[in-house]
Amino acid sequence: MKAAYIEHTGSPAAIIVGELPKPKPNGSEVLVKVAACAVNPVDTYIRAGLLPVELPEKFIVGCDLAGTVEAVGPEATRFAPGDRVWGSNQGLLGRQGTFAEYAAVDECWLYPTPEEIDDKQAAAIALVGITAHLGLFREANLKTGEKLFVHGGSGGVGSCVVQMARAVGARVMTTAGSPEKVQVCRQLGAHAVVNYNRDAADAAIRRFAPEGIDVWFETLREQNLEKIIDLMALGGRIVIMAGRESRPRLPIGPFYVKDCKMLGFAMFNATPDQQRRCAAEINRWMARGRLRPLIDRVLPLEKAAEAHWLQEQSTLGRSSSTLTGKLVLVP
Ligand SMILES: NC(=O)c1ccc[n+]([C@@H]2O[C@H](COP(=O)([O-])OP(=O)(O)OC[C@H]3O[C@@H](n4cnc5c(N)ncnc54)[C@H](OP(=O)(O)O)[C@@H]3O)[C@@H](O)[C@H]2O)c1
Image 1 (tube, protein in one colour):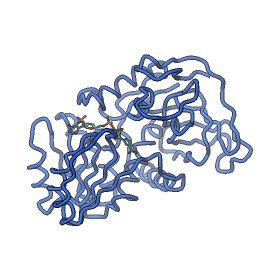
Image 2: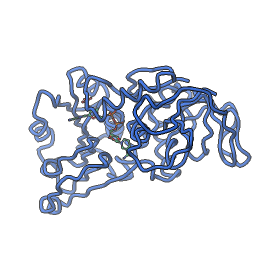
Image 3: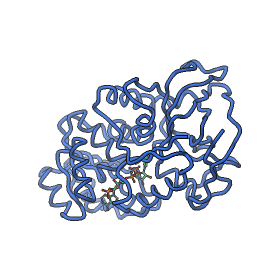
Image 4: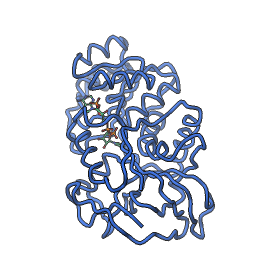
């Protein structure tokens, strides 16, 4: 089968697109004929060797996938050949990735694809959708009427945070780096959007939430906790989920006198049951048109290295003009 893989970590040029043996589903694995996969920043960190993870000798990159079940392992019970599925949480913790014509995935990481949703959309929502859901609801317990702020409302995670927060009746503010992206965030449902390259975000946040922000979902890799805590409401929750190298100063005094909580999490630590609960609600929202992934562009699998390069420019290079949403690849 055709696959995008690496034999050693390195730059995007380390990605080889070539032939690898088609996997066989063992135990509770399901063999998925991949119709679409999506790029995430973590794919680029793993490929670059920035994360201390053991990789198979020929490591197929990628976490997200969507496609159709071709065969099931002897202990698989949830799916049957012909079922459409989507999933994430591959390509890490010793598991092979998804950028290939086929992937053998334990059924605990797969979810049925609603018939209203195509495979590209399902792949594009996978990791970012589950991440947004875990952060908003398992961690921050966001409630109707609360005020939420998220950086990067047109980013992979941010665009899901904006839509999910709207879906439960929160008041939503976000940022974008250009007038076009401001427009995109508004279309996703944000009540207030500030172009951080033009206007002072702090003043706009104070106007949006004079009593403070209830849930701050921080997608940036460098956090200004001094500023964030100053802008929080009493009892506010700060969700932290990016920036492994980040070592910001935590102003303890203002933090505790506001009864604030700081909630850190990594999506890949969530159990299969926790991720399945997120996926079920994501499916309901997508089927009803309440949630859609933001797809920047669709590329053939042969362009995997280019896709990694673009994702790196956008996330690590913080180049606002590179991407608006997800890169989807088709094998
Ligand atoms: N903990 C977890 O489980 C988990 C899961 C998924 C992702 N992550 C991490 O979360 C981060 C975001 O992931 P993603 O997939 O959403 O990335 P992404 O699609 O690249 O989005 C990043 C967003 O950040 C915004 N941004 C960049 N610099 C900014 C600045 N100075 N001020 C305001 N906004 C700025 C960009 O907005 P503009 O384009 O408008 O500038 C963009 O929308 C990454 O570091 C990723 O590794 C963690």
